Length: 213
Image 1 (cartoon, rainbow, N blue to C red):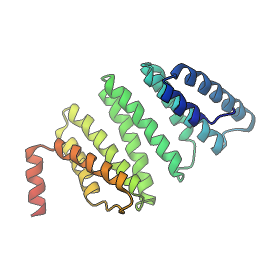
Image 2: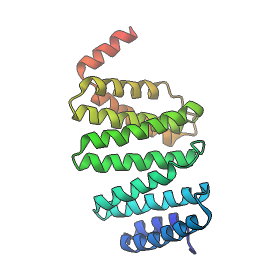
Image 3: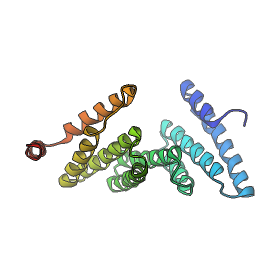
């Protein structure tokens, strides 16, 4: 291919030319699959295919085809899961694909399935933070995943688990110190914190005060 898949994706989305992007990404995926058949599941090829399949999922989701989007994201997860978990870019893409499946399941009304995918993403991100606790963006990712799981717990009527999840995410973000040059991350931190605090009930807030006095 004469142009990188990411560039195809970006340019097509800017122009809202989704059919063209989907067609070209499909050709790219076929090309990578044929290479895998020849040389096997190398890390580089699995990473490339996982990324391209995720982009195809994005195209289908933007076109309103949720079923195909889930299929592509699941394939993306399948290939990315074969790779070593010490590459931050790969684990981030894997966790994002899991979250996107969770989002589609959530909006489709399948809350249990949504929680399962959100929880898988949370576990991927927790494992990353164990070895990269000094990477602020990874800590933010864990907090976002905690919020997603807790939000589904709340919708399922499990107020205790939801409260615990929201509170854990709040504690993470309140203890996160960002460097002055990370203004973008600070805005995200504050935005997520505002959301999390808005989800706590009055009883939760009173309990939080008791624990800090």
